[in-house]
Amino acid sequence: MKKIFLYILAGSLCFTACKKDDEVERFVEPDDIAVRNSYDEQAIQKFMDANYLDSQGNVKAFSASDPADDNFKKLSELNPVKLPSGVIYIKKVDAQPNPGVAINTDSNSNTASLVKMMIRANYYVATDLDGDVSLTSYGALVNTIDSNPSPVTDPKFYYVKKSVLDAATTDIAKQRSYYEIEGFQEGLSYFTGFQGMPNEANYNLQGVIIVPSKAAFARNENYYGLKNTTFVFNFQVYNTQVRPADQQ
Image 1 (cartoon, rainbow, N blue to C red):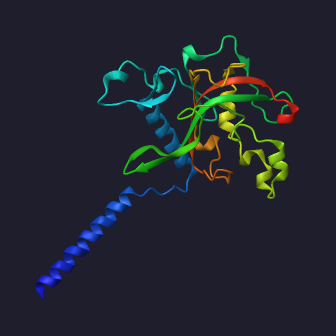
Image 2 (image 1 turned 180 degrees about the vertical axis):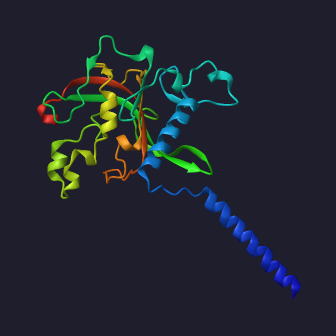
Image 3 (image 1 turned 120 degrees about the vertical axis):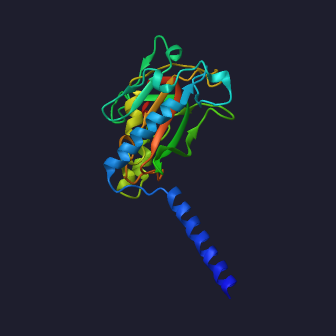
């Protein structure tokens, strides 16, 4: 009888310990938006210290075992520019068009730019797990670079067509802010685009735009279901022109 009691006690202690371990690993979204913004800022800095741009401008993580990336600079060493909104953009020096075409990212402007771009857009949530604040990968918003690369024209997070807004059946879905990521538009306005590059041209990505959640959707409902989410855009603009009337 004593042995049975000891077995039950040991099993109970094991279950409790396992449960406590699970609780340590579980991240709970903070109620305070200021805490969320702080997590984003800390995690973005850590991301910029842990990643670099390879020879084609791809964002890559440093490897502790491969010396091939030892001569690359961290993203944080590539003159990142932080805007008042919290958006950060980084330009790859040898990848900018010369001359380039200015990009008007104002969706409501009559001279807004249509853009065709090669782009990898990943989304993350900054989490604090036992004091370790970092960007936890959740997936890709769009990726036109890896496997069958082909540029995309006016992705919905950059510009949503009026026909989509007009066909929406709810008030929120009739708003541009439901689809478009303002922080991406803001960051892109600091770049210039190429004009008339063929789809099959080899890419040399122009740089990176990092958008913290407060400059994206924050905690608002959105088309993608991505709240409290930080976005990292790695891209090259293949073509830039005033958006034709039939593309608005």
